[in-house]
Amino acid sequence: MKRILIAGPLDATSQAFVRQLSKNTVLDLTVYTPSEVTLSAGITGFTGEALDEGGLSAAMLDQDLVVALAPTIHLTEIVQTVITAAQAVAVPRVLVSRTDDIEDLPGELRAAQRTLMTAGMEADLLEGLGSVSAMLGVTPVPAEVVPLLDEQRFAG
Image 1 (cartoon, rainbow, N blue to C red):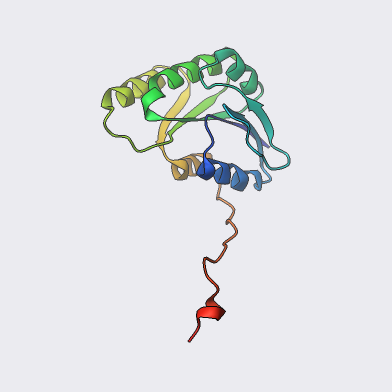
Image 2: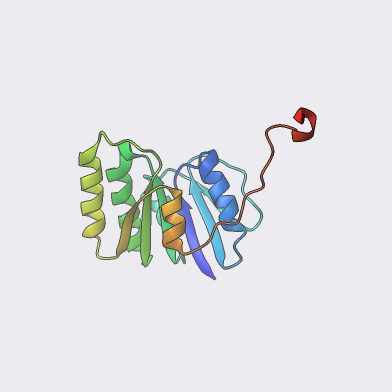
């Protein structure tokens, strides 16, 4: 069983991603997020700020991997906090995924990449949840499809 902590704000897309991951029987998920969210059965949840190093370290205990979801505007600060917390509790690997597509802050991106490269641990900066799935080596469980319209009613 692979123990994974997902840390950061969970919007609707991130929550759907967590629900899909929770259906994978080889994963044991923990979520650390700044606001309360409804989680699937079997997921451990903690509420705390991404920049709270102590709370983040506590949530990281006994995890095999940390996935940090971070907005670009706070990327450097969050990466530094996550790396420091992960080093404190000896988490072997950290993945940081940006939660937006802001490209106007190249300094933030470079600083975050530099911090990850010099962390002395396995750490990667990713773009989006698809990249996270690929790095985790898991295939997402198909989501339930809800039709937008009744095809029978509009047929011919």
